[in-house]
Image 1 (cartoon, helix red, strand yellow):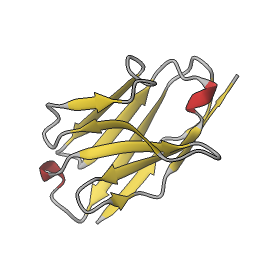
Image 2 (cartoon, rainbow, N blue to C red):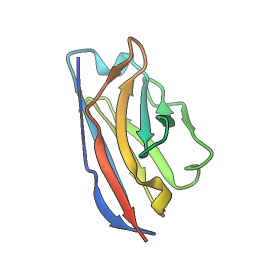
Image 3 (cartoon, rainbow, N blue to C red):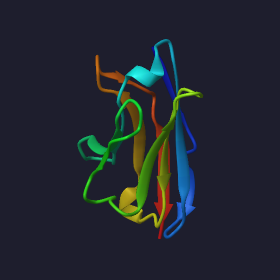
Image 4 (cartoon, rainbow, N blue to C red):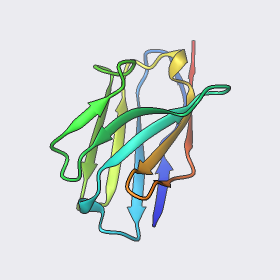
Length: 113
């Protein structure tokens, strides 16, 4: 199992980014996927989750209405579209396959004020 995140970077407050997580080594369409984040000095927190076929999504209250999780099972990729970014969204963002608890290496998102 391999999960590889990309798309992080530096963005001004109010801007947007789209993160991608490319999965390999398993039948992607059979598994729910999550995005987590961890800010400096804070615990890792669940940002968003999506069911195996994408019909069900859930979000942390702090990102509802601003972030959208989606997936393309033909590309074995899960996405996190982040709009109206705030400085408090600054964190390392991780992709997770919750079943068996597999994690990617993370991608840094920094939002400047």
